[in-house]
Length: 502
Image 1 (cartoon, rainbow, N blue to C red):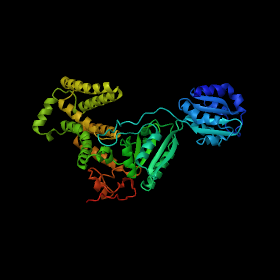
Image 2 (image 1 turned 135 degrees about the vertical axis):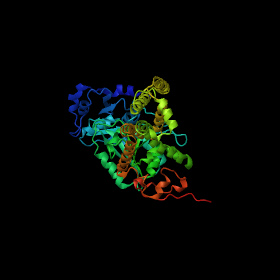
Image 3 (image 1 turned 90 degrees about the vertical axis):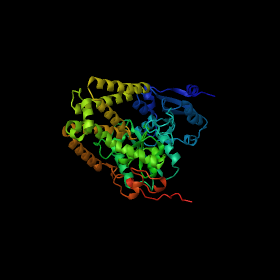
Image 4 (image 1 turned 135 degrees about the horizontal axis):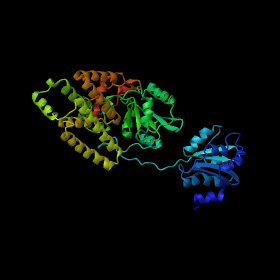
């Protein structure tokens, strides 16, 4: 079998270089784009391969990127059929080729940089572009951020086509619509808006499309960046779009009338609209029995209030309201803090910051070292702080419990928001005591009630529009009773046929 490189050496007139501009500028392609234009625009692009070939007596200029194309496949799918064409029209032997008929050189360059092969036929005014993109990519593997014991174990990857195929495998319906966009002035990212026709609310779909059309940015390195530019309230610390890298979770959202946004190069899918309570739901809730799922949801939800009130209550009680504690507990706290030279608010802030530093260090370090640093560092620093009189042993317990509860929500962005809110509660507790905590709690509820997700109230599930929403809220009822779609996204509320009892 002839190797592609040997075939090119035999048939190529020469490799195009910067000195070929004069020769190529005389090529007539209908007065539009010439190979010299491509070479000029892609100067100093070392992975650009450009050849002038003679195939069956016809001169052909070929352009492609070595890093984006499999050369063996290129030879078999393009050059070998052209060699056997025997004077036939190239479009007849290359059925997947698309003729470029406009004079927009930028569009042709964008396709070339995405892995297309561009052919200039010198003897006829014809420019063909063929999608020959082929690169190595990460295989479909288990989700690391949303791991579950039950249910499917696959997750999205960084290639948009593979992610859409994972959804197509689960929803084999023509109602699954995919609308493609190209955004980013420099990166030209491909974005896909996915929804179920006749289920998703048409106003929500148009709102998402309009927001993507209005986005102007140099490029998106990941879905969380794009998501922040599409959310309703960009100044809020709380995420207003859901984020998931599990196809089963995304499929359930589509069937419930939600809209997915996928970005090429990112393994995450943005789900909109979403609600505050859904940030505490896990895909595993539907794989567990309803009683277990309800218990876990309640623990996650009330863990939010414990983590933001636990250490701040320590500060407010010791600073302003010691009479609220039983005498025995107050005696224990007084003995524990007898050697601590700082006021409670400073003591708590120091330990909280140490916990954050350990968390960041554990994340940034290699996995094996990070786990060791997190465990050993926490034990050593905690023990040394108590022995040195920098913190009380009771505070170490409270901060540890508060830190663990902040990681309970399945949504990582919600965990970050909770940690930020906890610092605000600690500071205001040190200034105003219990009154400040209640004031901050009222402000928190007012802020959550003001938030919207794609125009839908953020607290919709907590304040349901219809009583059927309570079947899948803070408590998840048995599946046979969840017969309506959630009204959060205002979908067509088609009733699901319940399981008949014999």
